[in-house]
Image (cartoon, rainbow, N blue to C red; front, top):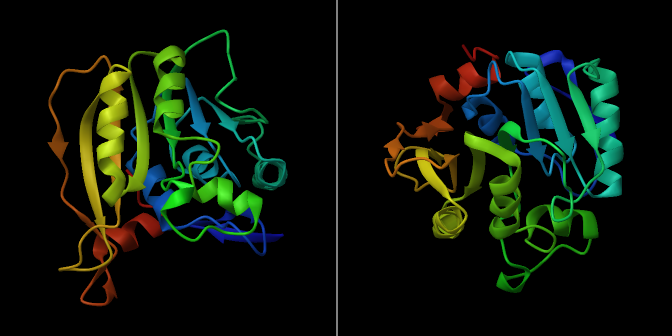
Length: 236
């Protein structure tokens, strides 16, 4: 295991030295999610807890339930919460959303889910990394099905997703009563097509989608001003 500081020195993320480690899309998603002031949020497939830790450390949120089913990643999640001193905000849950049934509804949800079907190409040998990257244990239907039951009416689900697989989100969202409300493309550089999209879906929302300006990771090979601002923690 390693302990890696992200944005602020006190935000230390425990993650495997080998295998699945969080990427820049998790940081972008935490920045993109409009959850300040929300009373209770669920971070679905929390992994090492990076999104939960960033939301708790950089946005004014109440309670975050960080849901992670895989034992190795759940151990990292617990360690992240402990060493960041965020136990008063983040509650780690070792649950599978396919059968997790809370007796209340959440005010918002965030998720950086696996994108790819395992039949689509070479898959990792490590089971934890496989489940984190491929839809072996959670797909778009599982995600929206849970949110249909356990998000309040009008609540938002914030996602990062593979740009090429975006049609699957629109399809599942529509079938489970969610409308896409915001979309931001994440491009590696100018004149390079997006690899990731950041999206907000709203339960029971009307059909109207706002296209946000693209988030360029770099501009002509240099970190973009927005990327730099995000990684400096200037989120207001």
